[in-house]
Image (cartoon, rainbow, N blue to C red; front, side):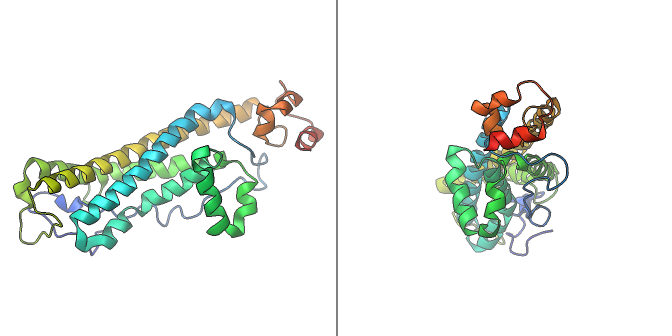
Length: 270
């Protein structure tokens, strides 16, 4: 679907793709699942276990790159297409949703803990008890699924996808004459230094955002798989799901057993 406010098409191929990507996940992933409810083992609480920290650090890098990509795309897109401000904002909604999921996932990280608390106490005040009672890794499945879905759509060679936006930007930089058309209204003079710099940043930000979605989704999938293996091996969730206990003094309550007696989790929690 093309945004009705998208810039007019340029005279080559699919350059209309510049700044015209629709939000892919706006309706599919508006609810962030926080746990498994009453089915299966109790949802984990506390920070992620040490075994998952390497994956979480890579996801953190991907999340930071997403945030930088959103800011760069908004600023440069509005400068390039000043008559399509609403379109530039709507094109970033999918990645904004991914950032929100990532903040929930990294709620125990020092960099995002303050942002998480701010969101929970303001926008999500009604579910603050549920959010605070569960570990952030309960969002691993949602994170990798949404990232991979957005990344796959971004790689489809259709007008408006990230791939076509990058190709169109490179084509314009290689041959600025393709941008000099009466029906295309740029915010900067074509061929000027400012136009080249801003268009280069816009193209690079789109590429970085696409790569961060793919890498973040893959790392989330691997982390989710490792989490399932840890649960199967036992020890992390057998004592009530408190990973903080498992990594601290309470970790000795269940050193080797795949499952803990019903009283073990309650004693450690006290």
